[in-house]
Amino acid sequence: MIEFRNVSKHYGADTTALRDISLTVAKGELVFLAGPSGAGKSTLLKMIAAMERPSAGQVIVNGQDIARIKPAAVPFLRRNLGLIFQQQRLLTDRSILANVMLPLLVTGASRAQAEQRARAALDKVGLLERADAQPLALSGGEQQRVSIARAIVNRPQVILADEPTANLDRASADKVLDALKAFHSVGVTCLISSHDEQMLDAAARVIHLKQGQLEVAA
Image 1 (tube, rainbow, N blue to C red):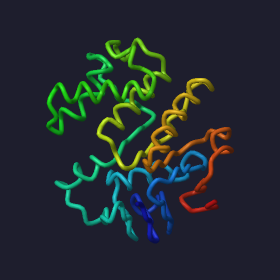
Image 2: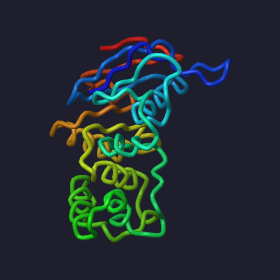
Image 3: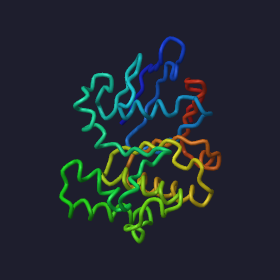
Image 4: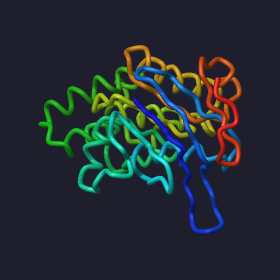
């Protein structure tokens, strides 16, 4: 599903975010990315989504070479990806149901179909009863679960989550992780970056990054 072949990423002459990274993630795997701030975790995830391009090497996602994808083709690549970042970027002037419907409406779904699938996505993260609430009426953990519902409403093949439990209390973090694991259990490939030691201790596979380099892959 995902392969990095000797990938490096440089920003100018003085900053190297990733250095000679080679790894593979199989279809249906649940993989955690670990490492201190600045280790390169976010850059690695952004490359999979074609938000960043490699300075050297190849990033292959579902058979496509990220460096060779034309800008016009990037939205089609991302339709198969669910992106979850620390900043949820929910639209505060509309309900959480409307927020989750938005990706479907953008890709041409009817309002009826978008609402049906958005309600199903909210149900999966335990927030269907809050469908009509405004984002600012929700806790931080609830807002993050809305961002997960929005990320999976297009039924992606891959979920990329960058520190999805950062700044959440333990109970909220556990609910977010449970939601991600539920999608993994039905075959969705998941890559999750995290500082959460409790989460990493329970992981089947962890990729460790340090100063842009692969430290340990288990």
